[in-house]
Picture (cartoon, rainbow, N blue to C red):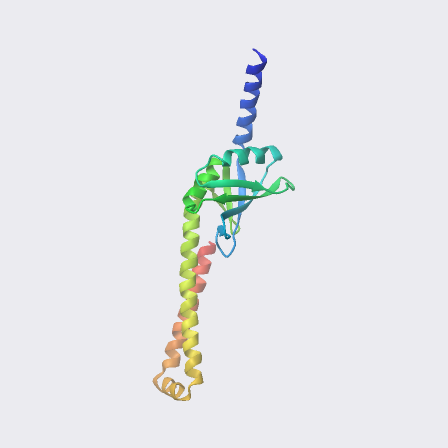
Length: 191
């Protein structure tokens, strides 16, 4: 065996060991969004656990070839944990993110203190988005009902008419129903 073959074999073994590690990441969300935007770029930020400098260099080189990725940058490693920042194309979405994490040998994704298998992360993001939309609708309904109650209370004629017709009882019942719906939604999302 010549030196060239030996070096190639060592490189292959090293690469297999490097990429056979399964990492865990924790998504860093901003305004409840996993893709953050600034004036020039879309960015996904996350912490990656169990890495070394060699692992990060290999991940950075591997990320260059992945669909939708512009660049991968990382900070200092502390206790085998590092902050990664990936600049992505404008059409980057949860499905492309799932492909990205699987391509980078990421086994688990932490999202809001819940650990998710990387193969199921796009569904978790979709469910999280649906949850936020539903919560927003319920919060708006609570706000609308409360605003109407407050307005009626400030208008003496309307208040008298509302008391006479039992409107306050109906409005308060609607408000309590919306609050219960919100509580149930939040409890179901945490399970």
